[in-house]
Length: 346
Image (cartoon, rainbow, N blue to C red; front, side):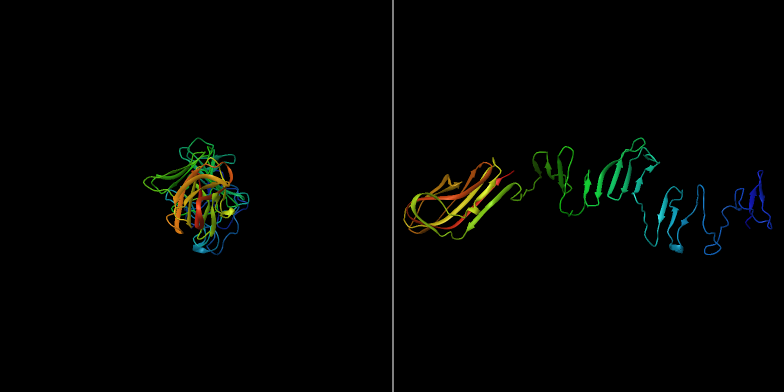
C-alpha cells in the first residue's frame, strides 16, 4: 500500500487517511516503497497536464502519443544509460525548425559556442538551413570548436566538395566542377592509383601504366575538315598549277596558331596522254604550299591515284586548305578526292 507523507521540517510524517491533502503542497511528494506505484492508470484516472519548473529525470521509457505499443518513445539504449534512442516503431521521425536544424557528433552548443564533449576526438556537424545544407568538420583540439565546411548543397542543386569523392558506381549530371586554391586537380580511375588525368595549372597530363590512351578528336586534336567525294567530275587541260574546286566551305578552318597541322589528301584521276607528268601538292590560302607528288601516267586514260601527308604550322586565324594539281600534257579528269586537316592540340 502506498503511504502519502509530508515533511514537517524535522521528519517525514504520514498524512492521515481522513485528512486528505492541503493544496498547494508545502513539502516534497514521495512514495514508498520506491518505484512501486503509479500516478494514474494506462487509459483511465489519468491526470491531464504536467507542468514542471525545472528538470524531469526518467529512469525508463518516455512514450508520446496514444498508439499504445506502437507509440513513439524516447529511452536509454544501453545498459549503463549513457546513450539515448528516439524511435517511432510504426511511423516517421521529424526534426523540424524555422531557421535550421543541427545534427552533431561529439559536439554541443552551449548558447555561445560549439564545444566538444571529448577534446581528444574530432567533431562533425550537419546543418540544414532554409537555403543550404552544410556538413562541418573539425579535428581534435581544445574548445571551442572552429568548424570548416567541406561539403555544401544549395537549394539550386549545386554541390561544393572540398575533399575526395569516392563512389562505387557512376556519377551522372550535367556539369562537374573541381577546384583547389592552387588551381590544380587530379581525377583518378580505378583503384590502382596508376590511371589519372592531372591538371598542373597550365596543361593536362594523362597517366597510365601498360595501357593505351585514346583521345577524342576535338580534345587533343581538332579535325574540322573531313572532306570526301566519290566523283568530283572535274576535267581540265594541261597548264599551270591550279587548285581543285573543292567547295570552299569544306576546306576553311580556324587555327589556334603555332600548332603542328597534319594535312592528309588523296586524288583519283585519269589522263588522256601516255607518259604525261602529273604533279600534286598542298594548297594553303589559295597558293601552292608544297609540291608533294610527281608521277608519270602509265597509259592513256589509265586510272591513277596520288596521295600524301604533309605537316604545316599555320598562323592563328582562319585558313583555307586544298589540293593542287599540275600536268604537262593531255586532259585530266578528277574522280574521288579526300582531304583531312587536323590541328594537333596536345
